Image 1 (cartoon, one colour):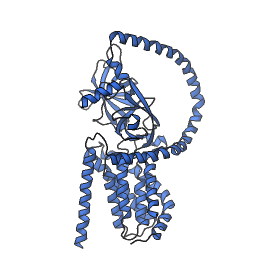
Image 2: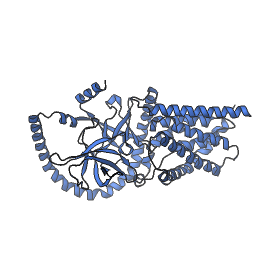
Image 3: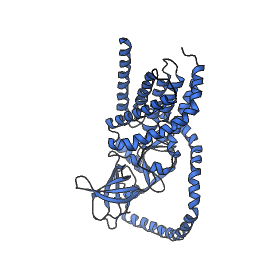
Image 4: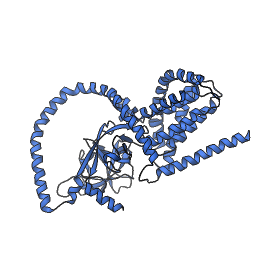
Length: 292
Length: 175
């Protein structure tokens, strides 16, 4: 029957057009997701919140058994470290005071602002099954003060940034899903203003490391295990958040710059509790004014 | 009423896909192999094979709805899963008339469906430039592990759900 054949073809074509329109719409640089999407995301997030508890309880049983095996030896090491910490606390306190005094003398307020942030604790309630786009959902949203592009970190270091915000949940783009559109300005800290600056430009799936492109090299010898921290210069991320450790340094494909392969400090596969960093209120005001 | 049960089942798997990675041991997840749960697709194929009677398009409609839901909840790029799942379920809908629905036929459809849908999804993402990857890397590190993981899921879910779907399907009056 030619009529049916045509109808089928027509439906397929309409479907294809809808697909192209939807993709085009969602790839546009949208500031906010539509209300329908927000409602669906929040509803699913609410159920995920409930399901998440028994699932993590169940899966934690197995990891707990592993943990118990290691507890004794870990305890010994921790005891030794604890003694050192007490000394360190005094030292840090003293340095902090001294630093503050010196800053006041120099009237350095700007770089201080870069380090000021409020933290919003959150729990990861689900992880996107689509592994191409590494995303996790957390149970804090607009109502709790989360905004787009805020940094998300664990105790170990940076894990990603907020991609979309709904009222009660929000989605986090993990470092593993970063591409050339999501750069982080970062640096390797050295003394006497010899810091090495660069950009974290993406994640290499094959080596499992972040690529830290070095812009200005003041010291050519980057050593293994040096810490890469965010420099706060991009204006999006606050300064001083640990990103990872240098694993290797390789020249890029044109031989003009060098790229350090950086192993993320945070465990990006087993994330449970995270902190969203809200930069200082005055800082966000400035940002909003600029946008307008 | 039976249709609501089925929608609830699908919704449950939509939620479970988000925590699926927790069930796998971390040594597997940490490697460069990508395991992607397509559990909703498997359940949809079972619905198409055993719940739908005659010429009804229930499974296709569910595929479009839940494909869109996956897009909204987990990826943010609308239409990709909706289109891929829709095409696969339609293909199963057409070809189920030629083959009798038993375990092995459903297994075959599932494997083909997984391969087609995952290829389509990757192809569309690649086309619009959301991801960068090499196809060489894709076959062994994504397609094969994904199909294997979902086949294991299929075998478990087949024996749990097929009788139920069959019963519900025969109890409903199809007009």
